[in-house]
Length: 266
Image: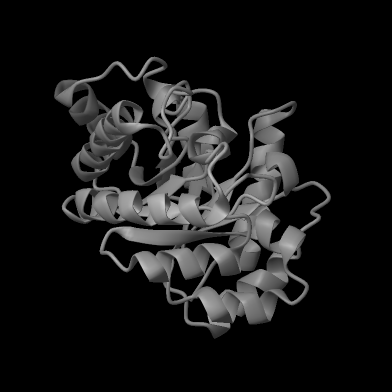
């Protein structure tokens, strides 16, 4: 399995101190959080080229992306026609950004941006299938995958089984699923069985703790989940996902120890 770190773990993505810690642990990949580089989504091709070059010179590549709706509460995949067109344009821009940076998995968590509101569940599902079927090809054209993330507290696609079934029913290139360890622990009585049942659509893995907490006293059995992934032959990326809080450097060091020990290797 390849290892990565979400840029959520540090306040500034290109901070040399952050990149040095990653290199010290043998990590050469990050999952980009666009607004940590461009807070107002204000960037052009030259900015993207510069970011790729700056990270590349430090031995780091962007290989994933998340928080794609941060600072964009106005977008929703269940919006009316005008709102949906705007949302789709935003996602098309995200897809192009992924392509320009060589990013594969692009995570769609963002429960507020996939809130069906008053739509009845079956109607919401039909709308979602139609719209995500139109989104998948945008990402496939950029050699990227829009990865739906189960959000147990969200209004739509709450667990891995439900999310996997949705991705299979959509059945389009460029659409996949994230396996998130915190969500898995919160919703699965038998993680091994659940993981085995969804691996056909898993395109990315988040090694996370509840509420994006640190790894000082893990609530998730990362060693067990890492072993399950190895038994399933998962050869994709496992990205550490943790918020930058309190002792940022110390928390990152401790979390990287868990990441490398429990998920490192084939």
